Image (tube, rainbow, N blue to C red):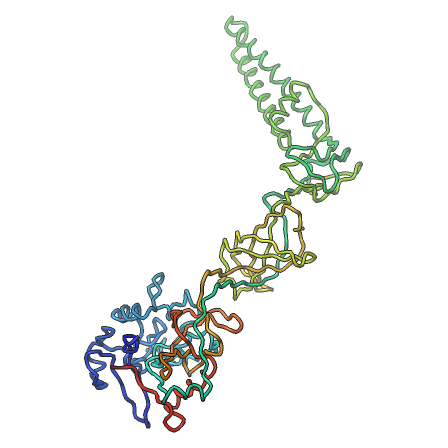
Length: 513
């Protein structure tokens, strides 16, 4: 713990005078301002250390190229990386401090807007108008700790142990608990498009038989509807005619070839017979293709040839096992290829389409669990998973379509019904939580006060996460073994701002040797 207390120095105002304490462990003498910026800091190994001299954040100017103050820009100052890594503030995925990584923490750089010069982006363009900087207010609980803040380098000491009781300080241990975070969105149930078929005849015809009623369970290949189709009868007749023509010209060509060998026929006559044979074969292939276009398989086409079948009856068959979910077939009515008359769906698996707000879509990932409650089945919760996330935002609703899949063995899910889905965006076995009463905003950072002893308290800068009602999740700043002040934490925050209250009952010092 003593090593922790020696980590950093602080910038503290006493009676209007600024005292700078170096983080050099080799000496207790604070260096001058000039030496702190010229010599390398032994703690962080940085020549001009913004951790030891926070004034550099303002005095060194703003890096317009990377959107951060020059003093803390790791892309311009390569010697800073080690210091950020040592502080646990580094994003390996993007090679930036986590407190600078917009990809992982959108909006995190907005805290540096106050350091931006109006012409920082275009310093050499005298003719361009000044850039207007519009500050964006971020909720305090979502703001990351400030690098320039030296709050956690201070310690508050009470005059004696009875002071804590007199001012009403209460403490509790940092809480560890599981965390499940969900995103609630509207949902619509749909058939799985990969197992939903809307069927129409391949050609116009009159319905003569309906084999299965609405709601019936059918197997793959079952006949659903039978129609009389004049085009089918004509196509079969064309096929049989083409078969006969091929046989005729095959015999004629063979005869002409035999006569040509005996010099009883001319080459022209033999060539004409071969040409007619080729034409008849083309006509046969066209007739076979016509029947295939009308829905006949290769086996059925061969059956037409062998049985000399000229029937005009067309059958619509189920493409897979499922349920008849729509039926618009009435005996005697005319059906066309443009209008489906029967639909089959496998309802054992359904799709649920979620409408996720554009501002929250970054929280959603493929594979995340989804909990669904459907209207009419309140109290029943079904579980599924996200399988697809849309690539565009709806222009009117500003939402993104997300598809999830659910098994539906009992048939609770019905197409086009509405419900509410909860996407599980986080499901951690263990997370750190601190009471909201313990968190104070001290001007630039969220802090909680760790009790080191009955008379000593140290502020810890916090990076807060999920708002769990009476508690905040702690992403960074605490290890989980601390005792934190809850009731009365506001009094300690006041001490940080004032330096002392209560006629010497309390004092604020720097952490140091």
